[in-house]
Image (cartoon, rainbow, N blue to C red; front, side, top):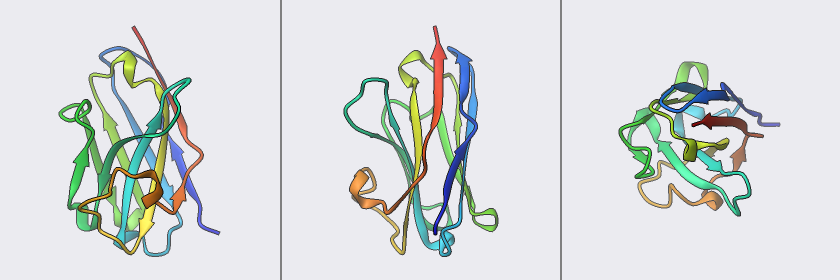
Length: 128
């Protein structure tokens, strides 16, 4: 059974930084699009944050996190990272890692239904 495990969440003050990690057992990780989504407290759905394709290309970001967040991947470790800087209270959410084998998304990367594998989420709380 494929596992997707996020870590690195926590409580941080506004302006601070966190790095989330997502380690998976997807057997074809190097040819999987990996993504981060988030769901705010009381939110009705998961919001796309960022995605990274094969060999770290292409990369997409939600507009409000571009220039503050950086996604990266280590295919040798089957791990994807999300470096978050200059965090804001509105970034408070549960962050989910998602993966879709066999596809290098140039479109549809922000659609929750486009990803087969999901983690359980890690909580990020940004205090003002």
